[in-house]
Figure 1 (cartoon, one colour):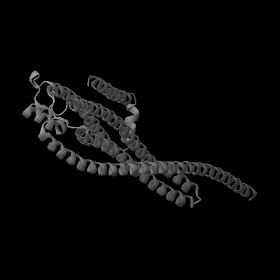
Figure 2 (cartoon, helix red, strand yellow):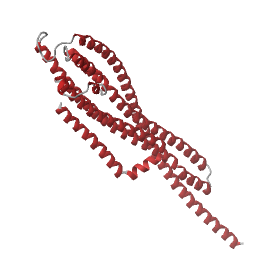
Figure 3 (tube, helix red, strand yellow):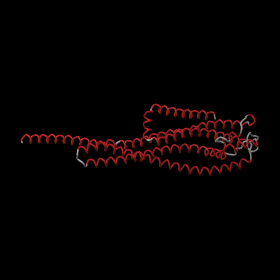
Length: 355
């Protein structure tokens, strides 16, 4: 168990290092992040709030695992020698191990014996722990997926603003170029340059929300993985301990004077727990399947949004080229108009001289 606790410390240090790197990067890139945040303050505020809540929840669970490990170590010592420790069985009921070790602890407290009949009973207890752990990991995974969803919503909103603004600009450009006068063309070009800020603002919204949403989801995903590894260490320690007790009972026999005699009432209790856990596992499998489908849909939406962003970028490049050609054409028209005006003035002067 000490080895598992040391592994837990490694995962804890990795989590702290991750947050330190994240905070350092945010400080170094503060000016850039501030500019990106200002492009869509409302959506980015929601994303950052969800991200901070996810990080706080993840670290709260991480610290809870440490407490669970300490309680489990005290519980194992208490099972070996209940009268030699000051451990209170009610403490274990407050942790994640309470639902699986509570009945065993109560049996020891009432009858002075510990009962693990077989490996199937041990497996039922492990499944109960997995059931309790899954509620934590599922919440963190959901928050990570929710951050992706918020990022995609901001992306689609930015693309909508960009496409709408580009349509208005093209309509203005088409209407202005129908008038061949120099003044009209210049007014259209000036108006076009002014209105380009709207599609640029839409692209800023799309990219900034994607940046904050996907980055936050990546960090929360890493914390979720580290939390799962910590839970695996706790589960492995419990499984090894139960296997030791099962093997010891099998070696002692039913009539021996082993340290762990059989308690007949525990068999029915463990059977009821096993049935309940089987039902809960079926429900959890259904929930996990629905969650996987939801995350798959989010991934597909992300891919489609990336394709849409690339399309808008290509259209923006083509529009920029067309604007450049329009500027060149306008310059030529202005130059030719000036030449025509000069020629007309010279013709008028020549006619006046001839008169």
